[in-house]
Image (cartoon, rainbow, N blue to C red; front, side, top):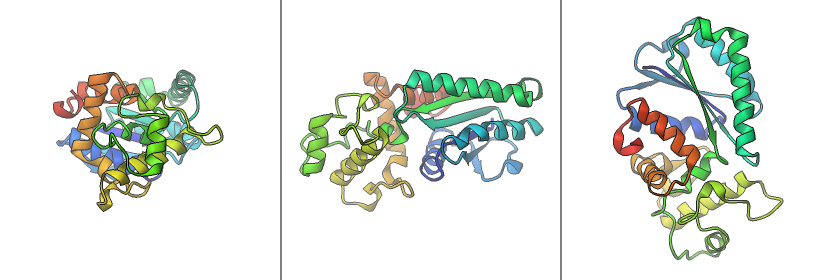
Length: 239
């Protein structure tokens, strides 16, 4: 089985998905170039943000059709402040158009395409670790965030921004950095786009999976984990 991940970001998503896939599919190996894909490989390519990633869908499909060794193409991008239903419809329409343009149905008939919309962003998912978020924050910043919206008990995907002028993704990132920094002074709890740290760990992913199963929260992540489970991913992470 070979997997191709087209992700929106240039840094965070490439690092996070690489680590998560190593946990979920230990029999697969990462390669850096499409030319190196042979058997039991996964490839992660940055789409260069939005809207550039929409053009990269066509490029990825054209590449796959030239040498149809990919079984599953995952297209991963943020919903940010857009309505999730509208964003999914937009992405599905773009995938359909690009498939038609390159003749993917005829040239790569075994290819399955999975649209993954991170609602509102990948940092939103990371907020779902219930044991990392302290019940009684000691810093005024995190206490303010928790009083506004408690991600331990309420679905992080439903959290609005704390300020009308601040994009949701920006606030979710600020909340995450404050939550992790309060939990531990260890460097790996210092989250940044370049160095996401502890969120890439096996146990962190397992905790997010339990949050999905136990509460029904993080539905956009749950959909991805369900797909990985269907593909034979490690059961304690995605089952």
